[in-house]
Each structure stands twice: as C-alpha cells, then as structure tokens.
Image (cartoon, rainbow, N blue to C red):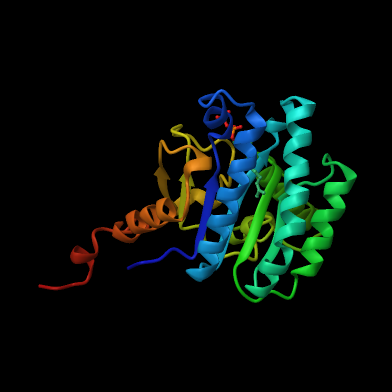
Length: 241
Ligand code: FPP
C-alpha cells in the first residue's frame, strides 16, 4: 500500500463530543488529548516521517480564557507525561505558529520538550499553535523581500522553492494527506501552501472518537488514491502502445 510520509490533522469536534454527552467542553478536550496520544503512537509505529497536528489556530484565541487555560494545562500535562515515551520512539518535536501568546509555563514546557527530543531521528511531530496559514506565507514573503532588498537575490529569481524555504515546514517532507475530523469540509487557514498536492480526507467522526483504527482507514483511503500531480493518468503516460 502507498503510505503517506507526511500527514496533517485538523482535530475538530471536541466541544460537540462533550456537549452531546451533557458534559462541559473541556471534557471533550481531555478525551481528545487521548486520541492525539494514540494517533501519535500509531503514526510512529507506522514509521511516518512527519505528523502535523492543528492544536490551536490563531482564531481559537477568541475562546474563553477558561477553555484556553484548560487546553494549555492539558498540553503541559501531555508534554510532561509523554516526553519519555516520545524520546524512546525517536520522535522529534517542533512547534509551528507562535508560542508568544501562550502562558509562560506552556512556553517553557514546549521549549524544554523540544530540547529533550531534539536528537530524535524518527518521526517529526509538529504541533501547530497560534498558527495562521496566510500569516506564514506573508512572513515568508517578507523574508524573501529582504533577500531582494539586500541584493542577495533578484526578484526574477524567486521560485516556489524560494518561498517554501522560508516556511516553518521547510525541513519536512511534502504534505501528502490532510485529515479533518468533526464533519466540516474546510481548511480553516491550515498549511495553505503545503496543501497544494495533498489528498483531503474528511470524516464526520468527532476527534475524541477518532482512534488508531480510524487513522488506519484514512491511510488506507490514501493508499487507494492515484496521485497524478497534474499529470495525465499513469496508464496514458507510460508510453505503452
Ligand atoms: C477542536 O475541537 C479542538 C481544539 C480547538 C483543541 C485541540 C486540543 C486537543 C485535541 C487536546 C490537546 C492536544 C494535544 C496534542 C495534547 P472544538 O473545540 O473546536 O470542537 P467543536 O467544533 O465541536 O466545538
């Protein structure tokens, strides 16, 4: 089966999962963190090269202080509890987006965990926090403009690769598959540039219910896709008479 190297996930539906059970939203996040744990472990076992989790968008900062506080506390708890196992499995952790608006404790927890796992030679786990796809691209454009302004390159030398080299995902393999749970079929400002050739997999399953078996179903669907990258069907391009 054709296995993706880099999978990104929009983990949606925690709130609905909880309210559907008459529980407060934070309970959905707590169970959602268990889903995240299971998917990270499964992705590592399958030897994926990269897994990118949309943990908090820039827009999510509009949520109540109480809910955000709970998500940050959950993240602190997760990072501390999982560190050793992630290290044992060779996982390397990175944050994309920005940690500036996060509580100081969560910022240090992320920095410490990144340092703790930096020698990991296995899967790269990227956690997107306060992430905005459009802002990532405009920041990349600013840096390219600086290169031009300082004479390091000419405007007519700018290529796709020039921009891609300035993105936070520069060290990662091409994004192959985006999974979104929770039933919505949109991208929500996630990895806009990187999604150019990715397959999209939408499922109504709410994130707290999305576990290893569901992940395998998504990977299997990917395995069946014929990826043409804009080419004609392979059978028509192989030159067979
Ligand atoms: C989306 O559900 C989920 C979030 C905004 C928070 C994501 C956090 C976690 C999954 C837990 C922590 C993760 C890790 C990696 C430890 P929603 O609240 O938007 O759900 P709704 O659409 O039903 O309201």
